[in-house]
Length: 310
Length: 310
Image 1: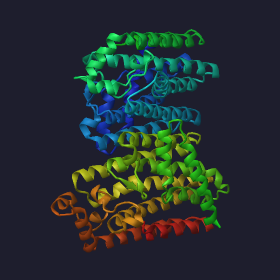
Image 2: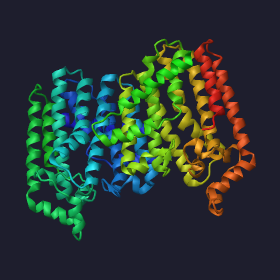
Image 3: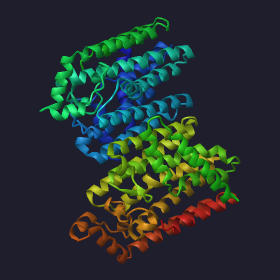
Image 4: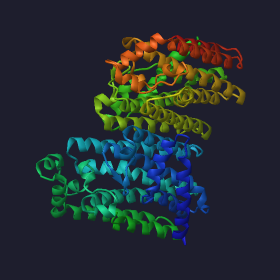
């Protein structure tokens, strides 16, 4: 029942995303819709909607603009990431960067970000302060990641800081905003925030594992890419600092070689165990909430994040 | 008196700008402060403060965060512009792009933009809707300009649309927000908005003229740069479509040759006359306001914008 309701309202989120990027400047509209219609898991808007319901919200349509806004932040960062990563494909389609060139990809990312701002503007300070914080932290996380990639090393502490800033922060804001809009009390908002933060950490570790282990065809993008960019979790999950650039420079097909080495080293298994442990914390946070169909769905969402293959 | 007051509060704006970009990620803080301390004319924050006073505001310190926010939007776009324009110097100093590289310049621009959002978050929807609109239009203007540069042609109508979106829109929002914070009535806010919109158009035309005619040493950046990027006003101010890329390709030092040709063609004089006419409209809008020292300063600001040599 709740699952069906969420899927129906996700269509409204898609419509909102498409509508908000309408522009008299055709290129911005085309490039924005190109990345939006190419899909994605829409984890963040699901989170906003389920948090809204779990906190006692009754009119799911009220939360659509917030759900669209959190997805749009994520979309804007993807467009800019693809410039920095020189990525050619994303979600099985050509990237904005590859199709429209760097200048227009940069401007499309800026446009999407300014549209987030437009979606959020009618809401009060409470929501905007949460969202602004998440945006700042996301950029800080991306910057730390790029710096680690450039340095060629990343220790476990830095890795945790990166995934907390670049992923968990927006997950947490997504849930908190939904819970706030439902009129949830402080404890409810905090519990859903804690849940979402741990879900975000789990999500990112699994993402990094899939970058090493996943099937490029299932993923819709080349694997090993995050490894090149210094995002690979696995190298640090075994607790050792790794100079992957140096390693990469010596092998014949360095990224493939490193991926094979990581698969064989058992580090992937360690990362998976860590993801399971953090996922357990996410489930535990849910216990602070009264039972409800939405709470059940949030629990299922953890399982989906842990067990996904793309 | 008002002029001294504004200069004093501009120091508070500088402090706010420096404080807001403090980050535990050193690189973001260093790169942000690098562009902030390199200065600039600070026209937009002046505008916010003077509009506040002209609309009857009495506590200028209340308007500092808004004044800082409008300058920070401008700063963020400069960092991204310099990536797209491959600019090496800005305000007489090395650009963020040239010093930290493209990836970190892109992230620094994103960071500054998210800090705008953080500054604005505590304000109500009225302010955020104005600012969001200005940000969206700014990106639309930049995109139209980049598209015109790529196509190698720009007609007068498109030129007007570009400068209206990329410059006048933020000028107008800067003044409107100041007037709103002062509790100005609808007519006052509209008059100051009309003034600022025309000031912005004047500012941009003069900017484009200076790009052709200005002394690179006074300007603190190479001249002819906007011409390469398709921003040159002059080519269109004489009403003729100009294919400057084709022209540029034939000369030995194509940009210098084109600059000389434009200087000799009289087109610069036409642009200067247009700037004077739009400046007149800005002054006229001020007549809707009751006389005040701040109104006098706004009138002086028009003269400064028209007569500036950098």
